[in-house]
Length: 199
Image (cartoon, rainbow, N blue to C red; front, side):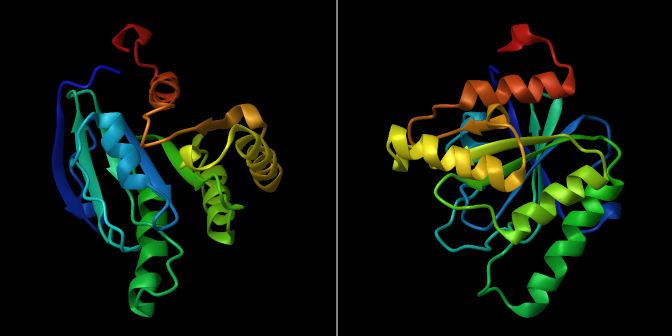
């Protein structure tokens, strides 16, 4: 995808505050500190479209970004950060599930997994939510540059077994080298029915 426009639209918590449901949306979700912000920045071709932080749990709102005026990328709050205040943790689940259940223009969800970690209960719960709402997941494994080729193959097999998905569904990605960017965009465009010649 040749991204010539990537613009922050707004942040919101409740459906009444979401932007108009005019463009197809692709949401990004994963555990805190899984590399979600870096992934969105690389896909958008911008260094700081989404703020990155070394502090897990920084994203506490749902953030909307316009891409080329043809689709919206949605940054959902990270989950699973144990040190976040209990009240904040209680808000995250309902906020995310309400978005998934009620956003009529949501077309796909990018579920982000750290290739170095076995999927958590939160990751498995998220897959369950997506199945419940019939939302096709695009499963991306981040931080692939931190493992050797042999280690990547081993972890891919373990993750595949843990989430009960074929290894071909797991898309590798490195924010450092940008490897995997084109493959992720191809899958997003396939899910949304966007023309392939835009890549």
